[in-house]
Length: 437
Image (cartoon, rainbow, N blue to C red; front, side, top):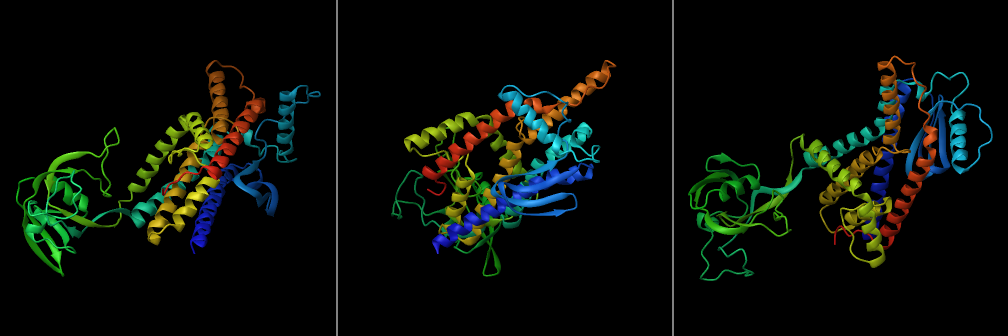
């Protein structure tokens, strides 16, 4: 059964990746067609064609390697002028790129080419793909935190400590020297549901904890619901050194990574954990936090890749927040699906992985280098700058930017991307990230 669940997790992530790539290309396809550009192909994957069907002027299909996708737009660059035989590797690459570009310009559709679009329309077409991934990430995170919820302490009491022991103590049982806990003295019982404290309604255990911690030595009225009836209890938090925790019950850490211990009000009760639905604004906020995190990773990518290489050679543990290949993401999805946890917990983690994957696709494609979408945006913006400059100085409009001249740089970037992918693939096979320990 564990193997079946492991495979199911991988399949879930592969389907999610396929949908993410497909919608990314839809983000390019729809505005391109709306702006009148002739689109010859819409393909998911690379390599040999597995299946395709022509609808109108566009061929839709799938290829063998599901590692990306593309649409073939007519006239991405201006048509090349007649030149003689190419000499040199780079000149040959440029000429080949121009020839391939010329082949996309169909006879009779010379006016339906990408390079003739206004700059703002070209930017929209190229940003459409990454923005589709960002939108998908927002939807996924919204479903995750507002539909399923975030695991937090609820207002239902799970346990009541009989006594108070120091935060540094390792004792598991009370002794006669230990004072009874305020919660036990007040008569709070497991199963009680907190309604209000000190006249303030509480909807999460974190809200109740904040009120208690801020009132050491003060007697508070605590309203609980027990067996369908509300009871008012009096409770006096004592001042005690406690490890601070966040809303999900995890210890708050300082800059050195150590738990933060502080003298606060304490009553000695614990909450049942459950999924607490968040406002609809929480999904976009979580997506924005992920964008910031991935952008930081991209900025430090060379260092991160070096660390991956070192861990691969030495066998040391990899950074769980470092870059992964598709294989690495699949392995994590399989481990999550096969772990011994409630189904909802596993599904929530899988959704989180898929949302993070879409954020990564969004940020990575915005890198301002060809062949990535960000590179095409830079080319379009550069042409816009040249046109504005010519207009300011009353010069003739400049010729469209011939991006095929950047083919040598594009090849270098492509080789680096392939090398990065190969390194991460090998690392994920032989020294994978252990998310679950």
